[in-house]
Length: 458
Image 1 (cartoon, rainbow, N blue to C red):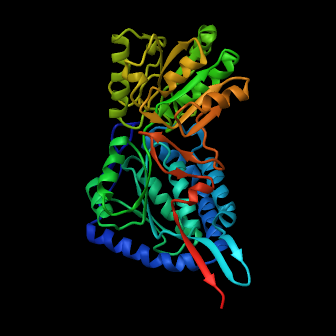
Image 2 (cartoon, rainbow, N blue to C red):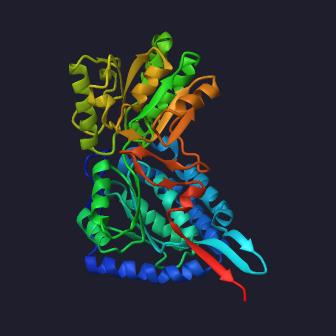
Image 3 (cartoon, one colour):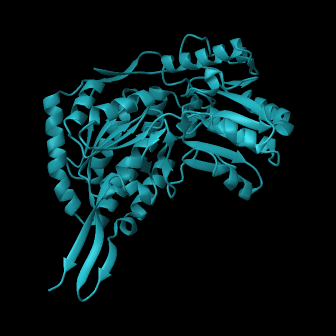
């Protein structure tokens, strides 16, 4: 059985029976058979049905928001993820025609030469629990629009999200077999990948799990996209407004209880602004309300699972023991008893890169803040990480931000914003953050393959 333990109560919220290998093989065969007819449909039909699927999800949103609170702890006051889902999906369908259009090289009396793009076949999406709709749509929308069939395996913690996608595709009129949600364990997932069941795999999750996906796919030559860990930095230059920077950077560190792929996990502030930035950050964090995510007054819910909260507690305790200063009096957050997934937010100063809280992915409501004396020092510290997803630079000088960004090893550089995916820009990372690209025109590259046509006229 797959069991989702609700962080609200610590008890089972939903459970599903695992599917057998024989059943899964049948599902994959059906997906492969359905894909050919789906790809043969006009592109406008496919994109229209993808848009309809998203509209069906929106119609379910009131129920989805409550389900998310129960499954992974996000407060209902934030209204779920449908706004971002629509923005990303509708952008990807709107650019499908121009992106997938053949690249014409020659059309003369002698030759027609062009490069076409065709769907890869069956796309396997392995989605995470922290943003179960937003992360999944990044792959589902372009894969379906390009003419692939999709098999979705969602995280156990958010198992209902996969079922909601299946309901939405059916209600939209997407043919049977073109989209299938499955309930499967890790071992069977690895077996399916090793059996070359899929033509492309998109995985979002931990570094360790990403390595397991690569290992399972070894020798199959199956394409893989991996978005793994992150330890995203923020840098506040001397010319920035520290209060304005704190408003976004602290929200980027604490929203969703810190469980964001591109959440801010370490902050570097020019020494001249350090005290003002810390003061503004304290004011923000002390205003949070930790509690039941079903309560409209709650701004910070529990983490998705006790083990995630315990990892953040361990990193924080180790840092304090090594000399860091905890700025937040956590006793004001009465819901944090230290025994469950409810975890008070924390700001740490006196930190350095010898501490795990500044080095390992925390994925929780804690952030370390360090003073720096120069851009060069900030760049060195921002690059001193095994991860490379995003970096947020706060400055009034766009030229300086671009110059700094050129020296930072990440997939995205933000200036004066953080924790946002622009669907028109490529979402990618480097180092242990993984490989591949989603969103933008490049998001179609992984779910299609190029085919060259060289037609000589006689």
